[in-house]
Structures are given as structure tokens and as C-alpha cells.
Length: 193
Image (cartoon, rainbow, N blue to C red; front, side):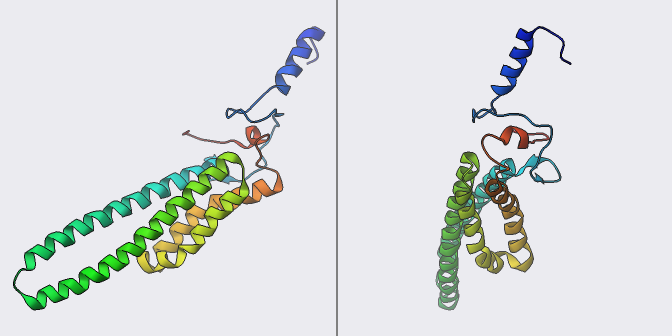
């Protein structure tokens, strides 16, 4: 509709050109369609999904670390219970040594995973695909220990599900679909944040 005065038409054009996304990134021109991948059954865009899965992964990793601390306290308590039985004490000492070695490795991997998740969140927030790629590389690095710790089915499935939105985010950033200027067109959320 071209009705209205030239002043109101000019105001409408200026308003469109001055539209910014909610994070304050660049001047954008809203388009009529979304070009990027819809993640989680169409619930959100891959940038938002990357941030969410990395936060969830950080929480899971912290819970595992807390479980290891609890396990340490439980082992220390059991060491006091054995008392005079030398054979039982030796078996317990062997088990404790194994658990502490395994636990130390798992805690190190959980810390590495938390660092990777933080890098992925930073990359998604700043639209820097190289940081997101670094997070995916850490997911690949911890895949083998995850198989050993959580089994062939659960370990890889979780890593793949957590890496999935990040891989699509990298592809979209590299192809120019997911940019600070274009995020207003790509942003999607069905219910949260």
C-alpha cells in the first residue's frame, strides 16, 4: 500500500533500516523466510541449540564430578570399616587404587568437556565458527573414553546429540547464513530464552 504522505512512507523505510536484533548486532533487513536449519524438531535455531546443549553438558559434567567426590567419601568410610581382616583390606586397597586412577581420568575428562562447552558457548555467542569447531573437536576427543565409561550405545549417542547443533552452526556460519547481521532472520524459539 503506497498510501500516506511521503513523510510517513520515509519513516516506515527508516524504521526498517534501523532494525537491530535483541543482542544489538548490526543493522539488518528482516526477510520473509528462514534459511538455516531448525533444530530439535523445529523448536529453535542452531545457535540457540548450541548454547543450550553446552549448558546442559556443563551441568551433567559437574554432576559427575560431584558423584566422584561422593564416591571418594564413601571409599574413605569403607576403608575404616574393614579393620583387622588383612585379605579384605588388601582387596579394598587394590579396588581403591583402581577407582582413584579411573576417577582421576574421568574428572580430567569432565573438566576438559566443561572447557570445551564454554568455548562452544563463546563461539556461538560471538558468531565465531572456529571456537565452535574447537568444542566439536573436544567432543570427538572424549568420545573414546565415553564409550569406555558409558558403553557403546549411551556414550556415543550423547556425544553425537550434543555435537549435532554445533556442526550445523559451523556450516551455517561458514556459508554466511548465521551472521550477527542476519540473526534476526534465523532466530527461532518455541518456548524458552
